[in-house]
Length: 155
Image (cartoon, rainbow, N blue to C red; front, side, top):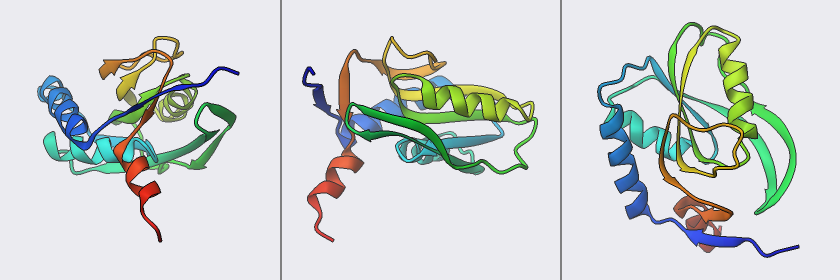
């Protein structure tokens, strides 16, 4: 098994990327933001402020057991059944395999929602290409600042 290349992603880079993505989206109209838990919640919150979208909710999936080791995709937090016929900005931190994004889009489209997908990072091998992304990466495990910050704390 080959070792996975890892790359740190800073709070400063997150802020810069969210500002850039926010500028690209400022003329678009969305009814609400749906952040995919857990990694998509922080960029979803930042973009909700930048775009002045006060309606924000989450949908949860679990896929990776640990870096680079996939498990079975499980829905852990379903979206509200009240999300119908909405223009949704769906946000996750990375389109890696596309499994999570694909499942979320399929679930949200059942209620006739219009979905726009945004991620911070996009792997070209993903089965879903986001409509907006900050950076394309290849075969890299991104260490996001919220992951690293918590590992250093001792609760």
